[in-house]
Length: 38
Image (cartoon, rainbow, N blue to C red; front, side):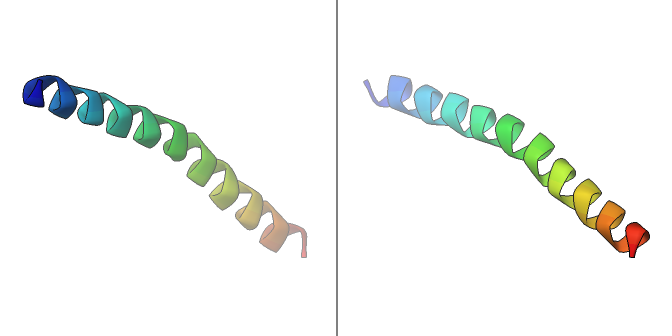
């Protein structure tokens, strides 16, 4: 049962990272665009 919990948390962490990467990239890109426009 402990092993399943570890695998589940690893999977959840991986999904969280995969979801966060594009969000951070979008924020960074929009910030740079805003600076370039001004």
